[in-house]
Amino acid sequence: MHDAKETVELMSNAHPANRYLLADEGYLGKRLHNQLKEMGYILWTPYRKNMAEAKKHNNHLLMAIRKTIESDFSLLTYYNAENNRARSLTGFQVRLEIAILA
Image (cartoon, rainbow, N blue to C red; front, side):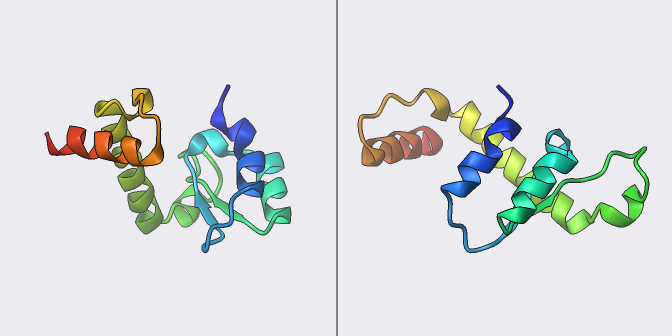
């Protein structure tokens, strides 16, 4: 299942200090955008190159921040964070730190 389908439920249980959500092109869609807007969130996704006004909309600073986040997620996958078999949050943190430091 694509994570965009669970975004509304995830954000209904979250209380972030910032109301901006940075996403990739997989989150493009008026329905999701409108649902999150009703909840008070501002969803920013880069436009595809062939979309109208893509050059005006695609803020390079936001794109750089999103790219950094994606790179960090890739590192977590590299360190096998998805298959961490810790039994507690502290154990998860310790195992992740050991993997990164090693």
